[in-house]
Image (cartoon, rainbow, N blue to C red; front, side):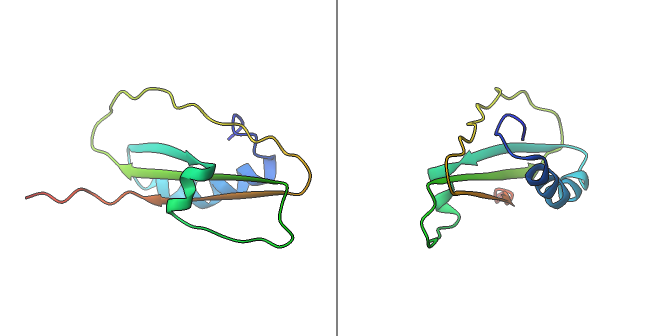
Length: 98
């Protein structure tokens, strides 16, 4: 969350919400989506229109064993004028087995 540029309060809110859900599992696979990539999950209109909008969604799923992943680039927010910070996320459902 530091790399993304969230304030201390924004980080606390994010962790307070998602931390307990992630802690229910021994291991989780986590991936973040940013800005325009978040439109597939939700859209919104804000009046008056903000000068800056930053969106971050956490996608995660419980996993059984450790896996090696490439480090994800975290796009930092650049706050300019009236800024809207949206964070959210979802649990990725398991793939059906045949």
